[in-house]
Image 1 (cartoon, rainbow, N blue to C red):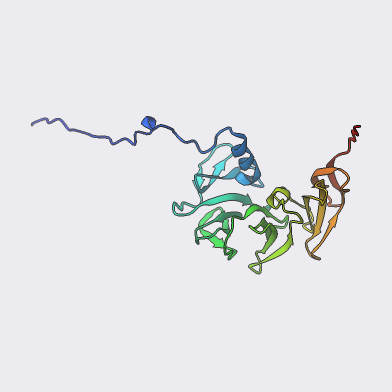
Image 2 (image 1 turned 60 degrees about the horizontal axis):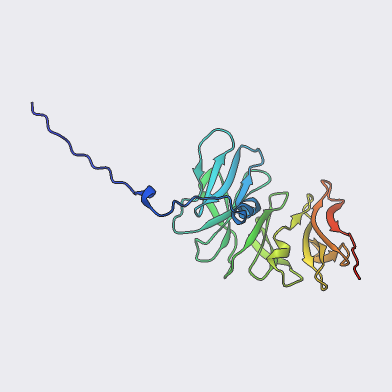
Length: 239
């Protein structure tokens, strides 16, 4: 028997010799804001977190388990996952078609992703579910509040931002627990922020706070009968 030396070469990506090793998330305020506003979504049973890292939607266990790449689409950019209240569906934005669209999938079936919209252009934001898991809401590039009905696969405009602030006023909108109303904050003509309520079924909008002072951060009570908000009412006149 003859012994011979085997030459083995392991090819390295030399990641540590690069000028910068990019992290998915850093501690900057901008990235933290994006993460907390549409960057993560906790499943209703609190066992998994949906988030997006480097253009992919991931499902991460909150305790122990396996992390799943739900999209695995290197040719597309997925973002803003939103878990349905019943825990059966996951919605997100993807530009797989060439323009950003709303997709819905069963998190347990990676082949179930279905495109629900046919948007022509723009960068939609603010994806949220209705409490009954039957509708989706988002803001389009025209600063319009859009609603997707999953049963009929239709998309319609509910209302438009009443000021030029656009996404600044709409991005923190709230849906009432009974699914009948939407709250948002909008600058009035004198630039003071006011609280607006929008009736989804009737298509009517109401201003419920005064434009004599700034009001913001509105929320509904659990029974949808009351609205709570912060209002700055300290008057400091000067001579």
